[in-house]
Structure formats: structure tokens, C-alpha cells
Amino acid sequence: MLTRRLNRNRRGTATVELAVCLPMLVILTFGAIETTSLISLRQRLLTAAYEAVRTTSGPSQTSSAGVTAGTSILTARGVQGGTVTISPDPVTAETATGTEIAATVTAPFTTNSWMRPLVLGGVRDVTVTVTMVRQ
Image (cartoon, rainbow, N blue to C red; front, side, top):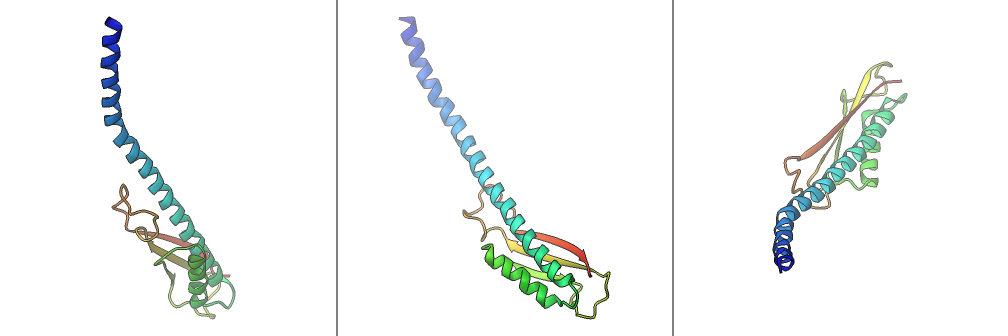
């Protein structure tokens, strides 16, 4: 008799535990998904910035060639709304060897995430900068 009473009480306890823990597990899961989406976007921007500055730092290259190279990488990687800027602007073919050239790539997180940011809603734009020396 005592065993049956304990089993009935235990069933109610399991329901309450599920009701308390399930929302936390869902938030943790979506938070992990959004975080990996943010890391992936940052890596795609880093690749585009590296390619832009590598192209621009080559001999007799200009900043427009770097912007074109960075933009083509953004397109190939599926980044929407990304912008590539080269500084100092403009870099001309006569820019001195040894000059530091930086490529900055920015993209909005909201349009490049597969779901509307729920947990990381404060992140709007992701910006990455890569610097190289002119060859």
C-alpha cells in the first residue's frame, strides 16, 4: 500500500521536473546553435578579409582589386550584406613597399543567421580586420 502511494507521488514529481528543466534545455540548445552560427560567420568574414588584403598587398595591386577579391569570397561563402573596405584608401600601384594595409569586412548577423537571433539578439554587425605589409 505504501509503495503505490510513493509511485503516484513520484509521477507528479517527474512532471514538475520536466516543466522546470525543459525551458532551460531549449534555451541552451538554441544558444549553442546561435553561437556556432556567429563563429561560422566570423570565420567566413576572416577568409574574405584575408583574401582582400593579400590581393591588395601584392606588387602593383590597387585597393579596388582587393575589394573585388573580398566581395567575390563573400558571395562564394553565402554572406549577405557584407562590405569590404581597404585602408589606407586608396591604395595605388605606387604605394610604397613596407606600408601596412588593412582590410575590414563587416556583415550583419541578423541576415546571415538561419534563424532570427533569439539568445544573441544584441549582436548586430560582425566586423573582422586583417593587416598585412605591402610587398
